[in-house]
Amino acid sequence: MSEQDVTQASTLQRPPHDDKKAWKVYWQTQGQSWRTEPEIDAEQQAFLAERRSITPDIEQGIYPFKGIKLSRADVEWLLATHESSGMRGPVDWKDESQRERKGLDLRGANLSQENLFGLPLARMRGGLPFEEWLLVTEEQRNLAAIQLQGTDLRRAQLQGANFWKAQLQGANLWRAQLQRAGFVQAQLQGADLRRTDLDGNTTLHEVTLSDETYGSVHLADVRWGDVNLAVVDWEHVTRLGDEQNAHQKKDTEGETKDKRTRIDDYKEAVRANRQLAIVLREQGLNEVADHFAFRAQKLQRVVLRRQRKLLKYAFSCFLSVVAGYGYRPYRCLMIYFLAVIGFTLAHYIVGAVAGQPLTFLNALAVSVQSLHGRLFSFQSSDPQTLLNTIEAFVGLFIEAIVVAVITQRILGK
Image (cartoon, rainbow, N blue to C red):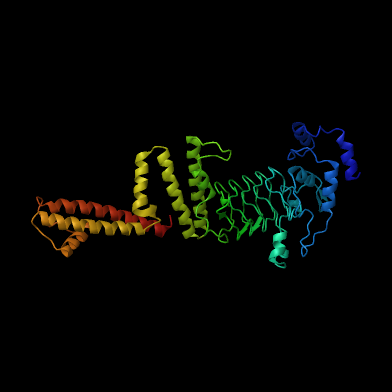
């Protein structure tokens, strides 16, 4: 029986077109629980079938759905009627025998702002594969790129999908399955990759993760696997999207966030930065890891303030000023020199007042020695003794901080 006959034979049992709830139940009974939309009409089916029959021409930039705005209902029908390797329907990634099947050819298609939540899009073709990528021009690569700006791809099955040159700005890939997916020169600014699953075969090469228009990518709780992050350009990612979201006073619906939500958002931002720092350090990218570890410490300070843990907050502020949490060691040197100069002036003034005047150079020598606890030659009744003692305690504290910073830098923690 032909595809058209099957469609006609089953339409009598199908729900009314505008009854979306009934259609969801219907698709579940048909074993296609991923379908949620009423089936497209015969005219649209004929149009898509005609487009699908077009033979791709890479040199001419011709693809079945290039420049076509597809809806979720269109994609559902294309998946249900997809045929490759003698099999019908979407690629079932759980079946290892299907992992080399070709998925939907959506090169050049426009799926921006569409809801593709939970769709089985494994092995989807959204760009040119590697063997063709090397043989074509930059313009031909761009013509094959899929448009997914702002698309909802949450929980989508995207294993082995091709996103080379894909436009994914602001796309939501929360909990998406991205094992063996390829992102080469893809635009991921502002994309939500939280809790996505990647592996060592996931390619992130020359991807763009941040810009002024869309912000930065969200990365909290990503399962990185063995993905290679050394080929990612982190230079322009000053803040993760998780942090940018935490700073926003309103949610995506425009409603003002309550206190609990603000704290949770900041905690998530802390977690995202720390997790990324750990993975980067494991791959030897220590300088980049330090940047995100430092951001995590700053965000944790905000959490302490919002939780009104004032003592811990004050201590965190102190560590930030004195040593930048160990990631700004030059601050220790600045504190050291300021302490030496400050106590030099104090020794000079106290000596003049107490009738034991010191030259500026002598005051400097006394300050340096006292700061390191090397000078206690004055009588206990002498005001210089109290000053020396105070300076010795300050010096001991500074030395402890310096040792801690050096240790952290050597151990890379």
